[in-house]
Picture 1 (spheres, rainbow, N blue to C red):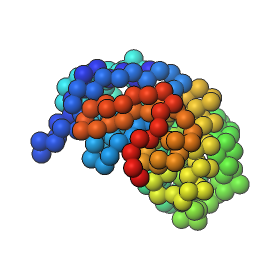
Picture 2: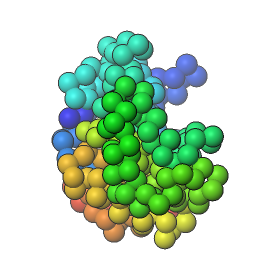
Picture 3: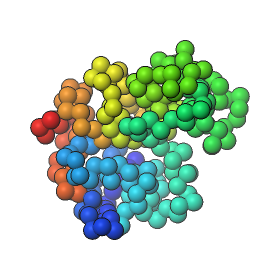
Picture 4: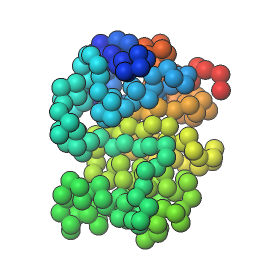
Length: 228
């Protein structure tokens, strides 16, 4: 599903954020990516959806070689991957329904399929009743649910989440995690970068710890392992 082979990423300022990373993530796995700030977690995550390109090495997702992927082909990759951001990145002038539908419109889904699929997905995240509201009328937790709905509405094989509970209160964070668990139980691979020690230690999954641009730990049902 996801393979990294001897991946390096060096930025123009000389910072090495990935220093020979090799790992494999199987279809249907749930993986936490943890580590200190500045350790290379965000780069590790961003390389998976080609927000960043590796300086050297090979990254394969769903049979696509991201290391050799032309910029024009990046949208094709992102049709297969759902991305959930910490700061939501919703379109403020569009309703909840329109924000989620947009993900299907850009891949030219048939209009008759869009309404059915969007409402099914909003139902999954508990927001079917708020389909006509604008993002500004929602709480932070509700906005994150919309972001998740948008990321999964086209049934991606992989969902990549970058600190998805970072801006949320603890109770809302647990609600969001229930949605990710449901997504994963339906067969979707979930890769989540997080600083949330309690979530990692309570809802057990594989843990990949990044330190100084290398994988320091890779444990099935691992712990967070850092002081909060």
